Amino acid sequence: MHFAAHCTDRPNSAELRLANRVAHRDWLAKYEGRVKLGGPYLAADGVTMIGSLIVVEAPDEATARAMFAEEPYNKAGVFASMELRAFRVVVG
Image 1 (cartoon, one colour):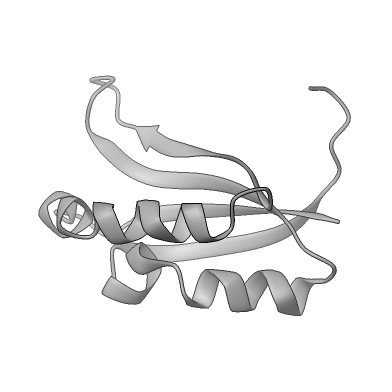
Image 2 (cartoon, rainbow, N blue to C red; image 1 turned 180 degrees about the vertical axis):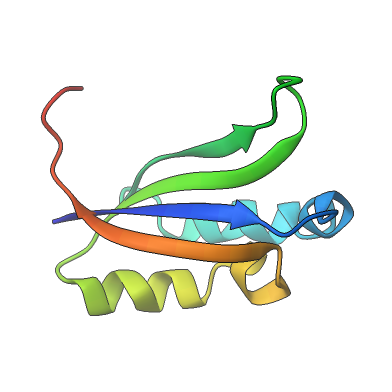
């Protein structure tokens, strides 16, 4: 089953995001094969990161939530909110 995490950054969290980028990429590597899609949401300028969309594969919601509990941006407080929803891949 797939789960999509829609994460919105806290205002003025760009430095905190950058400070945790290496740990975030290590987390992605840890779940290689289970992270199906991911990347930052961008502001209107096309450059400033303002959140993240990450789609993972997990047997159930509890497992997906446990994965995201370890996610470095989440742990560091970069995200103001994170919404996790079951997701069905239809295209792609």
